[in-house]
Image 1 (cartoon, rainbow over the protein chains, first blue to last red):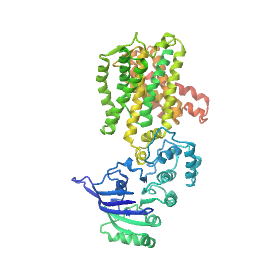
Image 2 (cartoon, each protein chain N blue to C red):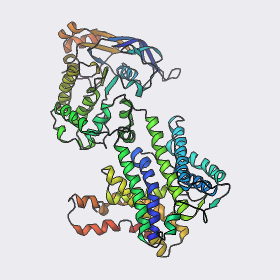
Image 3 (cartoon, one colour):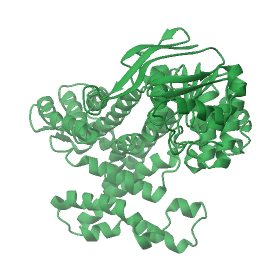
Amino acid sequence: MLTIDGVGKTFFPGSVNERRALTDLDLRLDEGDFVTVIGSNGAGKSTLLNAIAGRIGVDTGRIDIDGTTVNRLPEHRRARYVGRVFQDPMAGTAPDLTIEQNLSLALLRGERRGLGRGVTKKRRERFVEELRSLELGLEDRLKAKVGLLSGGQRQALSLLMAGFTRPRILLLDEHTAALDPQRAALVTSLTGSIVAQGGLTTLMVTHNMQQAIALGNRLIMMHEGRIVFEADDAAKRKLTVEALMAEFGKVKGASFDDRAMLG
Amino acid sequence: MIGAVELGLLYGVMALGVYLTFRVLRFPDLTVDGSFTTGAAVAASMIVAGQSPVLATLAGAGAGLVAGVVTGLLHTKGHIDGLLAGILTMIALWSVNLRIMGGANVPLLREDTLMTPLRDADLLGGTWLGALAFLGGVLVLKLLVDWFLATDLGLAIQATGNNKQMIKSLGVDTDFTTILTLALSNGLVGLCGALVAQYQGFADISMGIGLILVGLASVILGQAVLGQRVIFMASLAVVLGAVLYRIIIYVALQVGLNPNDMKAVTAALVVAALLLPRWGPLKRVPSWRDLRGGRANGRAAAPVAEDAPAPAQKEA
């Protein structure tokens, strides 16, 4: 489904600020894989997601999604394949548009947008159904501007918008990090159900080890632009936070950032 | 007074264009100063050359559209700052407009224009019927804008102004939506230029100077009174604002202010409309939409809201 082959990316090459964010990275996701990604600050986790989504270009290597090489496609053309939720709850929705307008925008992910009505009765019925699954009561507030929602509600909506059109790949970039624990737990459980329902192939960056272990069927640990540890389905089932910390200790010079949560 | 309302309704077309860029796309587009004159110049030159006024007016709108595309290309593909991109097009258009007109102005006094039937029937200036016709025309355009913004493409344009990164991640080429909005906006502005030239009976190289402020004054003024929460009201407010602006200018002239000072009056008006809602006591002045929504306490406050632009005149 997703094949990353020898991808490298260096920021500010040739300057004093030169930084290798990704080094000859290989990663393969099969259909339905849900991979969680952990790693220290500057390990290249976000760069990896940005490279897949097309927000940044890569220097070397190849990125294939569903058999199509997407390296040269700009971000908006890759959106057909890639759904995305950002860390900032404000980033994934348009605040001055209503809930139903935001959902309409997401419904046409990667498709041509013409002069048809944005919010039709038929679409609205679908939105109500989708929103009901969030169990946040948003289905009664279709005409409310998204800017009026709380961070948790907005992130849940972003998640729905990223996933309900079943993109080939779903990218989650620390999407619960900016929420309070209660909201984070809610969004985490929504993530599990939305991914399971859609059978979505997912790559999720997180700094919460418990979350990294609880969600998904594979786990990778990144450090200095490489994958330094990988656990498959069987290995991941047995993983504990302690074991993960021990693995991390093996990586020389690495330390989790302050935000890393163990429990 | 009737003349001021007529002119205001005509300028409502331009205000709709400015609304598209300034409010919807959140792009401060200074192309307007140039594209307005371009629309007027093209229409006037074509009418003098014997073309049908309808065709000439449409061509004026088309010329404005092209000007918008140029600014859009400079900004998106050339990565030039939006303000500067608009200024560049505007300045270049000065020369272009002189070329089109072959001089500093084109008189249309004895030509057949879109206004001729209205004038022949004595509907302009003296009776409200001319204003009514203009009102119908501008409302049709307003409804078109409303309709367009509610389409899938229109929603993508709104999202481009609202959260560019998000709409990109949903597969919209924001370069395209930006260029398209600038084109449509300047198309409306060019159309307005063409209409105003025919209304006043001439096109003039300097008729667009400072026009962006008139547009902003209309948008801000109207939306301060009517609100901008839903597009239907926001675009209506813009047209109302354009009329309101002309009435304020008319009153300012009646009071005896020098016509040469009108640019300063306009600037002061925009500043006042921008600042007043943020200042202490006036923050509590409810606008009409609050009153209608029943959020304000009493009707007594309403006249104050209507008088809000008044301090601007004093400042001027």
